[in-house]
Length: 170
Image 1 (tube, rainbow, N blue to C red):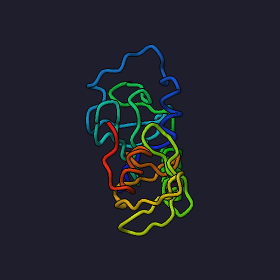
Image 2: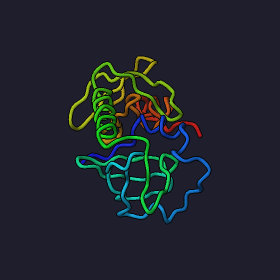
Image 3: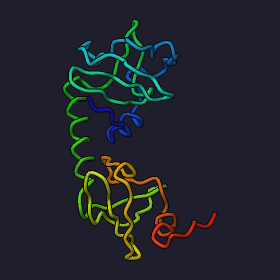
Image 4: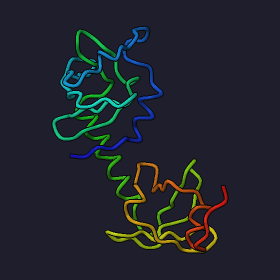
């Protein structure tokens, strides 16, 4: 089962709830709550809630969506996608995330700054060619693919420090 915060979620975040003006309460987001589309079709079930992120289990996968993507209605949560549309969006974003972890793919760091490109990748390590031309090898677990590209939780300065063996300036 896949758990991914999807790129399409930003679209859902930007859109208004199905029935504007109704305040959402945290009790509406209980684990086990049914999620339906606007016509009442089954979309899935809430399996987790973490802050503003609600995990919905469809017939095939799990999707993390913002609470603002839902409208509470008669003990259920309505969302602006059918089950098929949600599954398709998740699969599209997963494919984009997988494709972002390939040789030549751009790597972004904290704040979205471009750090370089993937020079080599295997099951244990990723070698990143930095903008400076230096190369740094990091554990495979230190980089993630997303619908918007490969991402590491470091800055260019932190990666350059790894090349030189020095601690980055504070």
